[in-house]
Amino acid sequence: MSKTELLVAALSRRRVNLSKGWYKFSRNPLSIFGLITLFLVILVAVLAPYITPYPEHAGAFTNLRESSQPPSLTHLFGTDTLGRDIFTRVIFGYRFSLLLAVVVLSLSIPPGVILGLIAGYYQGRWIEIAIMRITDIFLAVPPLVLALAITAMLSPNLFNQMMAISLMWWPWYCRLIYTVTASLRHEYFVYEGELIGASKTHILFKEILPNCIAPILTKMTLDMGFVIMVGASLSFIGLGVQPPKPGLGTMVADGAKRLPDEWWSAVFPAIAIVIVILAFNLIGDGLRDMFSVEEH
Amino acid sequence: MSRFIVLRLLHTIFVLFGLSLFIFFIARVMPGDPARVALGSLATEEQVQKLTEQMHLDKSFPVQYYSWLKSVLHGNLGKSLYTQRPVTTDLKEYLPATVELILFSFLISLVIGQVTGILAGYFRNSWFDGLSRLTSYVGVAIPPFAVAIFLLLIFSYILKFTPVVGRLSLTMNPPPQITGFFIIDGLIAGQLGIALEALKHILLPAASLAVAHIAQEGRITRSSIAENLQKDYVAAHSVYGIPRRSIIFKYLLKPSLIPTVSIMGLDFAFLISNAFLVEVVFMWPGFSRYAVTVMLNKDLNAIVAVVLVIGVAFAMVNVIVDIVIAFLDPRIRLRRREG
Image 1: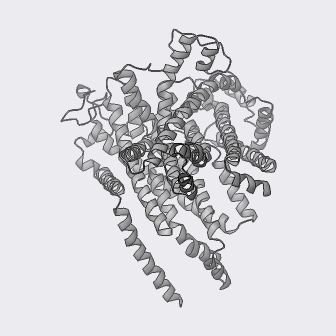
Image 2 (image 1 turned 30 degrees about the horizontal axis):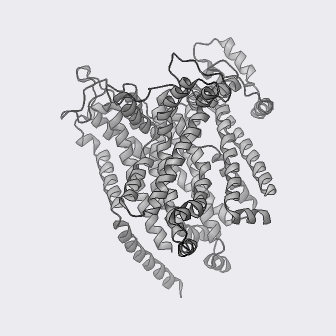
Image 3 (image 1 turned 90 degrees about the vertical axis):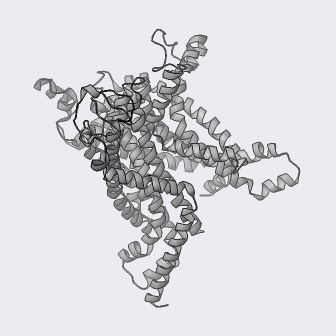
């Protein structure tokens, strides 16, 4: 087959697989539920200033006459000690969570994937050993612990939190892509590419990388939830979004101090965290099922 | 096998060395004068000067690292600037509480996770399977601190069934220290009341730690039981008339345990980092809460020590897991003997 024919064949195969994949994905009610939930969460987070009842409550706002109100029709999730509407703050809190997840993954996936490709391709060379041993060092301690330590040593805020988590996250992608690349290294299409003198960049990024998309996508979706959980955990300890900004973890920590009387100020932000993580997990599981069937 | 273990240990030493270099580097290059940060803005210039000399902060980085490494190898992790005591003393005091918590929660999750996993795998697609699947979805999506708060609210505040915080009631003295685990020490000393009180105190924190773990454990056991049930040898056993029950407990449990054991290293990592949050909620006087406190107070010596202790523990767990796996799975054992 000529190059164009090959390309057309590959493309059409991919398109067929996509619609087949979507069919498979849509047969799983849980994944669809996750997708709809996530869509709603993103929608309300983006439109937060326009749809929340008290957008001014998202920042430093005080109205002591309305402080510590239990949930009611005027304040769906109640109010905190400063009289701010918790429902409004939760919706704004989603913005920080989603921003964190997107920034961390876009900072950590590219370097992780590139290093994994290189290490997997140059097996047995010094560069593989160097990359993979450095990866081992980063994976020697749970990511939350090291992210905590680093954020604490820098000053605690959202930016440093993002940097610390990103620094902890790339090794997971490096190891994942290393494994995939190592298994593809001796496939014929890689040898053929080498034989006709394709450049290393072409082999790594045009031949091997497209075959890594499925595992990357699956892991990325699951990690969105995981990063949000780590971020909320850091904020809960006090090393993330700083007040008066409405971080979900920060709000739970704040409410936890006032248990059991003002239970709403801890419970609703906590449920909000669970919902967004659950949505990403359900979509991720759906993607995994979809890809795993396709591969076999 | 022994060659494999030696290689693993060498690799572990290398990784720990790298980790110490990394964390030490971060601790030294952070913005601001570490001595000033540690002492706070109220300290005099003289105090800062003294600490700078003590911690060799005036020397170059390799010199600093070398002298630090030398004292660590002699069992001296430096002095905590927050508690004003040697870090090793702090660790000795706080570690047992966390180890007790983690072991207890591990036990809970292993038992419940295995049982639900086996039942769900055996009665696949039944209502029980569906229910346990749904629960496990939620279980892995709840952050540990949220679990802790929900449990605290329900069992301590509403049902008043468990105590709210700590390892023992304030009026009680801890049992004489032998293992450092209050439940076991209380039993050894014959102080049943204390052992019982300690048990009551550990229930909620351990359960909070266990939730995510149970969910994962159950899922993995379910799928491996379900997978192994399809295997030919199970069909053969049935044909020979071996009762279902002994097929499950005698022949299925062991191969189904392998995936569970092989992720135990990861489980441990999750438990120890989740303990950071759970201990804060329950004011559990353990290692993880100590770690959080020193981190919030920028106590450099203690932070480096805490991270290294976790690194060492994590590495040890992984080596043990590798050895156990080799004993559970003869194929891996043989492959390693050859390799």
